[in-house]
Image 1 (tube, rainbow over the protein chains, first blue to last red):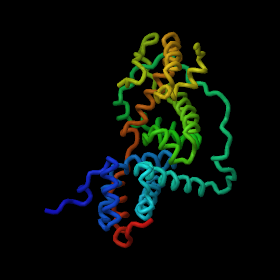
Image 2: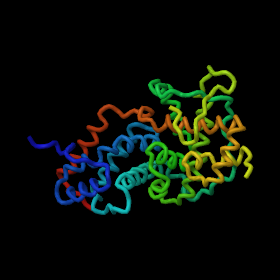
Image 3: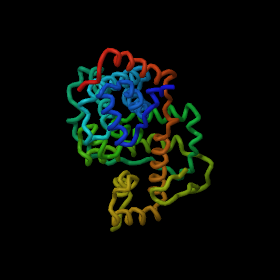
Image 4: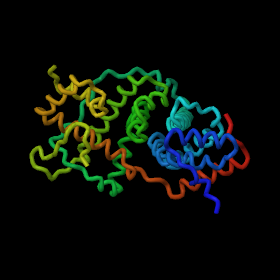
Length: 221
Length: 83
């Protein structure tokens, strides 16, 4: 029985992907389905976070994936395929956002970085937040709204690093900005998210300073 | 090196990334050990990132993947990959 071309190749490791891309370019077009499959979820999350709309996000991913297929021969191995795809989605999303505000004159890339200091939310305690809270629709919506509320230049960086989980270097490459600027924007985005979400997600049950701290870098969950 | 709260906030993102040097990391941790507020800011920021990064935070529309691959299939029939 012939293998299903959508599942016949292992993708993920760069070597496998490079091999798959070579086979696609040599004529095995159907393998492109499997090549993008590991990323389609993340691409949607990124597009949704940027465009704030389900239908637009889906169109954006479809357009981006078609662009990637049509431009596959131009993919260079210096980049990871995932970064390349993320870059295309980002550019398509940016194009849609700019199209939606044609009267806006100044490019966001040329806005100066504000020098104001960001003050995080003052919270007295933060108990463990079980991941089960994500089963609650209102919690998911609160988080999505907080991301949607970030100014665009911060939202882009936050989505690439913390939603798509690209590295700092990959985020910089995808957005065409320096790693230093990624770090500056990421700090502001993360503190804005903390300020917006911490008071709302903080549990109220604990006594004075009832949260548990763990070592730096360790997960709480 | 003694840090005040504002300085710690400025480093929190890099601290979570693990990209601060050892001297600065030590100074941040010394501050955190004595400052409930900054410790709560760090913990809440880190927890929010865990929630944001969880697959359940965003829902895929029903049929999303099928529609994506169907559209791709239409193009693949007509076009070879290019570049």
